[in-house]
Amino acid sequence: MKSRALLITGANGFLARAVVRQLTGNWIPAALVRPGTTASPDYDSSHDSVDDLVRDLKSIDAILHLAACVPSPANGAPPELEAVNVELVKKLVREYPDAHHVLSSSVSIYGTPVSLPLSVVSQPNSPNAYGLSKLKAESLVRETSKHTIIRFSSLIGSDMKPGTFIQAVVASARAGQINLVGNGERLQNYLDLDDAAQMCLQGAVSEKSSTVLGIGARSYSNNEVANILARLTGAAVVHSGADSSPSFVYDVDHAMDIGRPLISLADSLEKMVQRA
Image (cartoon, rainbow, N blue to C red; front, side):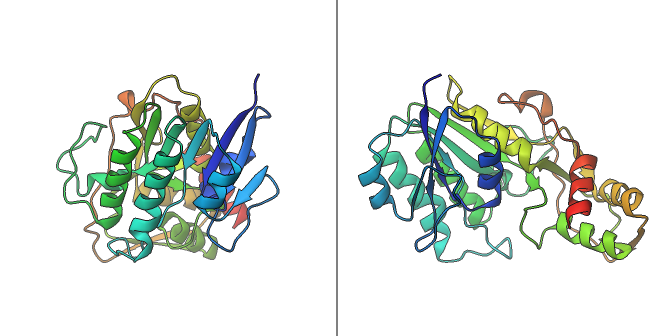
């Protein structure tokens, strides 16, 4: 099979690292990283500016737009949000219009769900600044003739950033007590990083342009997550306070046109407990 040039933005990020682990020999990977940084030796070349990239690579077969500014707290809007999530995508769409553009988008574009389950045709309802930035990026990518937009749910894995619900309950489970806010009935969907990486690569070779959901097989309540961890660690589960966060449930049957998840939530959590 002919070798193909693949650009990965956010090449030092946790999703990009999962993608690189699954690359086959027919891809020649190039990295785009933050200014002043370098990518791992897994990449054939590394660039820290779009200008340098364009000078070195005249043609790219596929681009994985994995670079992202994710605010913390979630309703924040840091100065770099538009630069990373929107302007970078705009530059690469302009410079490489013939590449297959794969955008790592987010279910945050939906905001607070009006009704469940959500699907690719569900309309946004007051998304936060992060969700709005992803909607802008989606619009830019749709201008290209070949694109795949993947609206990912909560990605989980040993390399994920701290501060998420999953990271918090894994840590508390290892310490012997899982602390849940509220009654634990809130539903969330989780997708293993390795499954997400495979979806990105499948998107890069897709023959059609599409917008899909990158989601796990079903949504789990906080109680179900806690009970899995309790079985793995022997930790006790303690409830306190109230949780007003919305639930997220998806139309799974019509979501995963670029591949179904292979890794169960229990297996993902077991790996995280072992590697924490």
